[in-house]
Image (tube, rainbow over all chains, first blue to last red; front, side, top):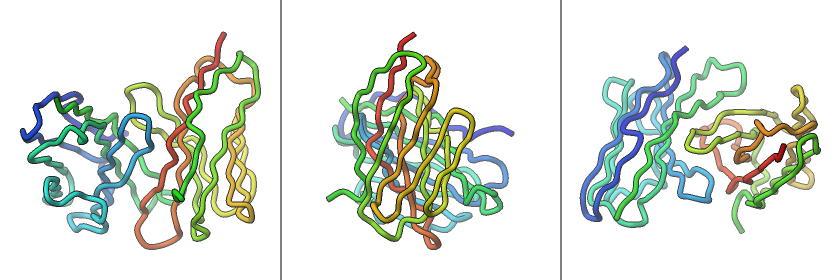
Length: 116
Length: 112
């Protein structure tokens, strides 16, 4: 079974520029998450999709971050304009309600963003 | 007070040692408790999962949940250099959003 795919793996941009990250979840997984992990901290949920609808985006800084999941499969996370404090790893994850482990969440390897 | 507290370490032990990792939490509604392992420049991978209170064992790993004390632990027996990673505790409530709330993560190094 292929895992969660993310791209690009690494990105360096200047502040006030824009950046977009792409995620392809595990096939058949209806739930998709974007987490932000700042160095030395645990991941923090930015947004959760169930199919192509938003379930939770309470911690998404909506003035600069946006995300979409068209057709309920792939997703993109965009940051515009970027700030220095957005430097972090952006983790995409997916889960299936059919999992026997209470909705096991599988993470991708992350997209590493450095804002200079 | 943060919802989930975890000592970030780092922790360095010799090969073969027993390792104890802990987290405390404040939200009594948490019912699902997980431990994730994260290798350098990789995403977290699920190591152990426990529902409500009790113990769960899987090979060299044992997870314990004490809901009365709001305290969870992960024990690693006969630790190996390959166990060197960051260990994150995570938890969530039952029902509703499946949002996981993570601790900061403890960086463990097992020295050969």
